[in-house]
Amino acid sequence: MSDTTGPDAAAGRGRAALIEGGVEFDGRDAALLRAVDATGSVAGAASALGRSRARALSRIETLEGAYGTLVDRHRGGEGGGGSRLAGSARELLDRYDRLQAVLAATASVPETVLRGTVEAIDGEIAVVDTAVGALSGLHGGDGKDDGGGEGDDGADGGSGRDAVAVGDPVQVRIGADAVTVNDATNAVDPDATSARNRLTGRVSRIDSGETVSTVRVAVEPVDREATDDAAVEVAALITAESVDRLGLAPDDPVSLRWKATATRLVPHAE
Image (cartoon, rainbow, N blue to C red; front, top):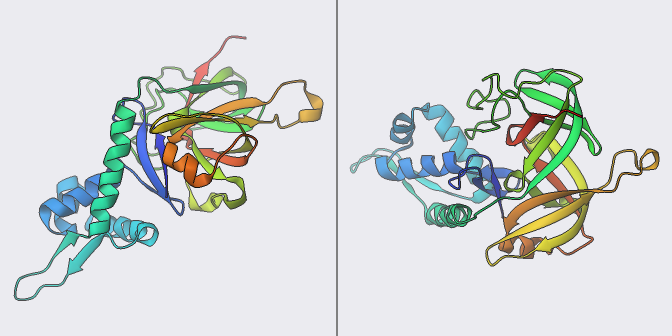
């Protein structure tokens, strides 16, 4: 299991998330499990959270496919039916809470800034041509994501602020707390994640912390022979435990991924 961060966290800009088998466990999932614990049923939890029972049950089943049994469900009988959290669910929640606490204590989050040109726009998402390839990000808003998928209505866009047009020069701003690091030899299947942005590179250095480390990855320009540009360094904020689990060291090949909704595009006058 790996730990990462993404938009919308308790720290003000990061969203804590645990990852296992390409399945993220984030704040919405934690809220669902806690609601099951409080109400004693999946139906009660869904009602309390304003979600459909079918969707809540489907999400729990998806999580259990990656994390193991999380909810013990009992059919009605002499004592009545209901649901309760399995021990593994409580352990998962404890781990998630620890990661959130670390984020809340983080004073600042490194940010990677790339320059590029807008080449396409689809609603709130714009595609930008950069030195390392096409990257997608939010324009016209502040880049927040409510925990839904790519292009979810919860993204805080459409305000008219920072709106861009095709051909505009922009800065692509990527918070290190939004980037997930994977072993390049065991990269996540692109079809198993909603993250649109994916790059590969090599670890250039690791700034180790007691709990959270900043991994800096050198990504080569797309057309290396046609440019004198140096490799772009992308920062990723992950737990020290994940650094050890992945066995990360300088020059190791890795893959990076992050959501378009975690990427902010800012107009830039050249």
